[in-house]
Image (cartoon, rainbow, N blue to C red; front, side):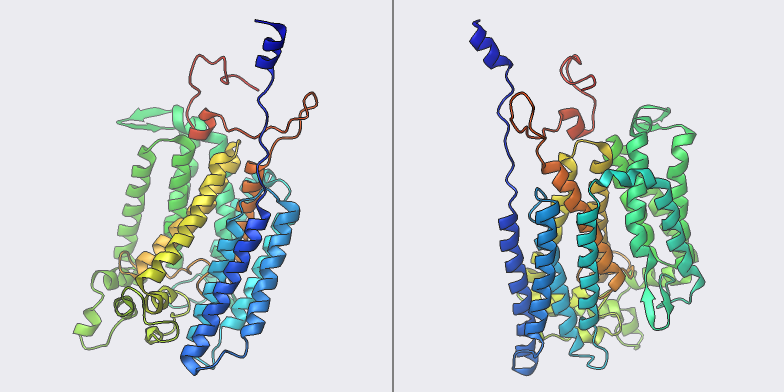
Length: 480
């Protein structure tokens, strides 16, 4: 082999500069705003035969929020996934359209203007997280502070009166907030940090029971504690949705950290036991389970249709293509039509086709979050991305399953879609964290001093799958 050939063989392969795709993001944002404005105008034409007076103001407000978010990403996270922000803007815009449509049924109780203000607050926090949180890994240092703050946020509503049977709200001076929404992010940070630090102990130490590797008591203790906390939330706050959400995310992250499928079975078993015990003892939860099992029982008793029955009627009336925006009757559902049951309005007026499009948007948002997690090199970022994405996925499943009669109703808010300031603000913060993680995952390494070549980040196979390195250990098994 000649010296030239040897030098060529030893030289690193030329790096690939990943495209930033900020222009693609801006184009998608323009499309998201136009679709939302079209829906707003369509509601006015269907209900009153004229373009709504606030259409221009609504479109301008949504466009300004989208542009500000885009500038923050372009300047502070230029390599971030170009789909995350446009999907969030489109879902938020469609939610404003549906709330505005339902406002036509309650002219003395309009919620769309307030929801637009909360959306602005959410985008402001999105910009703040993207601009100020230069390295998301600093969150790992505050894992136990995060879980302590989350527990406080979940406990405080217990001392306030129940709203619609659940103690999840803090109301004072005409102002209301749902602390559990913010606790979701803090719990996810703690889960990711704890499992990143103990993933090997969970996977490879302890005693083996049948096909499950049980870790030591020191490592297993927090897992049992999380289960007990989720059951306590279910009992004290009568909040089935939050309990399922927290425990479901923890089981997903436990599997992502260890790669052990047995943990999924254990998680499902513990969740089933807790739900069965509480569902039989707690009256509010028991009534929701009874409504789920017999949604038309109230009609048979001559008491009229329940909310769940009316929701099922709305989905049935929508058919394949729907009745058209503004031309449905889902307002008959009552007080929860703008929050818990807003998906019924989408099902009736947009039909199965519209529902499919909405679910595909959520699926794409979750998939891009998982993609960012798979591409990141270190375990905390990977688990945090998986946890935040799973929060969205489980929340959509729990809410959609409840209003469609697949599982008992939970009383949670559909991400970005339903009325709720706490919910929309929290969702924007989660998207901001995913933007930060995806930016780091896609960002090329600094140029090497000897070649000036920008290297593309390549995830090792053992990090990509969470398993042990293959081969004899000479090519990647040791430290780098």
